[in-house]
Image 1 (cartoon, rainbow, N blue to C red):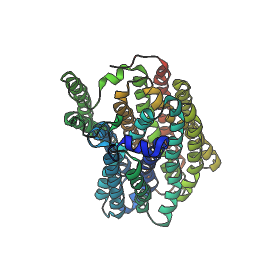
Image 2: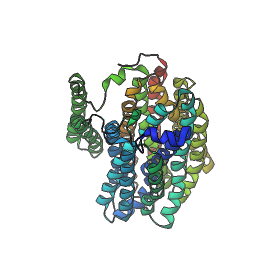
Image 3: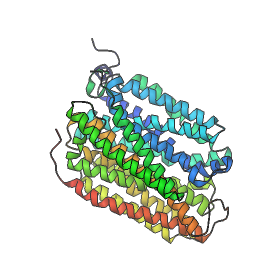
Image 4: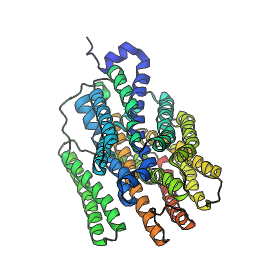
Length: 486
């Protein structure tokens, strides 16, 4: 008799529909996780005023989430093997739900940050799961269609989120942004109890062999990430000595992490990150692209709402409305491109997307206080279409041909490096913006807009365009064939 709730049991009950029901379930949870990571950017100016904090401190609303999200991604393979899909997924949804409610009710900024960290931890574990399911549950011929379906659904949440969130901030306050994840979490919990298997990846029973978590590697990754981001903040504040010490500590943690993973592998342990993954050339180049474009994507997601509100003086609801067309076209682009991502050259699709993204940033330098708003909408659409070519292609292209046993770790690692780049990108944009504003003799605490303020924003957009062009060097090499790592 089949164990109730196991993968084999659910497949026998739902047949070939099960993989689509499973993908839909994790898609809804991913929508909640992604929405919680991006929607708060609309409420940062309102939150800054309520708590009386500067831009440097306010950007930690985004950065703290992303740091927690980045680090927790590395634990996904262990959690799935130890507790199975259902327990891991349900636990993350319950934590995300609780943190969203707690954050919306918080009256102290430190409590808000704590809620964001907890949200980030839950969201990080969820992020690699859909890629694992697509690569394991679907045949190669169906992976493009599955990727298209998942990508379009997930992107609709952040596409609609800023528009709805902007209205909620105007009508109520930033607190409403925390509560937006509640319905998604409740629906995903109900579906998980029906369609998510209790077994681990590959259909084996959870807790199989009682795998141990590499706590040493996790500690080094966490400390290194925190040192890097705090070092960037200290550099902006003028404390060069402390900044150099923190960045140096981050470098030492990175070196220590690599050595520790090698020792774990040699001693037949369970390393947090299997370094053998990087022997697969497409994966090595794909992770490089993921890190660099993570800086540009998440940095711009943080920067653009600030530019529209504090640079051009638009209201949060107006900002959300302006960003809606680009978000909807991103979903449409992913739906089209995703269908061909498993059958067409990855390096061409990713490279084309990076060019469009870089061009959208560079064109922002032509905007001034007299520019029509339709021009801003067009530039935002151009950048989101570029993302639509990158997002569905990168994961499949980087892990195509990889041994199936390495897929869970590969999905975690590529998401980890993308989010690490994203966390650094948010910090870099916040720091660079404050620095350039000071150089131009302006400040975001000043309520009036000016050409000097726009010039400071322009210089940050130019940095993001340069970062995208750097990623092209790695994207073109994804095409190189490579043997799968042992």
